[in-house]
Image (cartoon, rainbow, N blue to C red; front, top):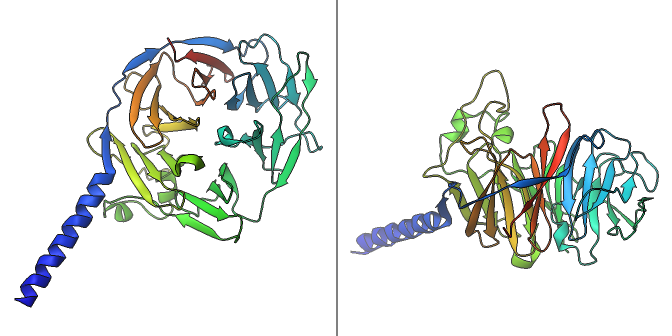
Length: 344
């Protein structure tokens, strides 16, 4: 009798665990709920631009330029008719070299824009431009980065740094504790046991390549997969809260013996950004060839799928959730920036 009761308890426990895992898995559709048209905000014809990163405030649009010596350019958000601020490429106190925007700059309590400068291994803060005439931007604050893995994406909270390491040694992302200097990794997430057999350890980092956005206020870390049709929502300690799958099943690309990565595979979530209220994910696996922007609340509830009238590479959204700014690569190898009004 005792043995039968023990077996019954074990079955109940396994069933409860299985049900808990399934409750975390949510299937969502990529069918557009609305279509949004972009207007040309900044053309490469105005100057040869190869923009690779963008950050929007309610008053200004900040663009990082791969090609020009003026590596950071600032334009009014209303239109780009006048360049009102810039930083030069270099190693001086007010220069930048290999910068990218902090992905959760929207959480800044002092309304400053934060960039990570890889050359100086520091976070640099700049005040939003308030000049009416063209001027060089002064770097207000330089915060040295601690000893931690090399990074290609950076988010921070009061107590931790959340990053994707360039060397691909720390799973989906790592967490650096500012107080203890401890580093913990959040491993790749998959429930298909064949994955580790199908893909070698060298390929796994490319298979699970991703983007990362953190919102401290709501205890949320969102990971958007590039080569897999999924988003993962974690809490700030790295525990999985939700797995969001686009379609009716999760799909992994077939390995190609010629490559470690997947250059010919579908690309799903190629850019992510957020505001205090919403998460925006740029999705490039639409059969139409256009991009879609998935809009979620920070609980992982899908609110809308906005199909654009072009293919975009990176997006930013202003803090009041009115406009999407997107980088579109041109046929000549430059880049244009388009503005999408979400209120229409």
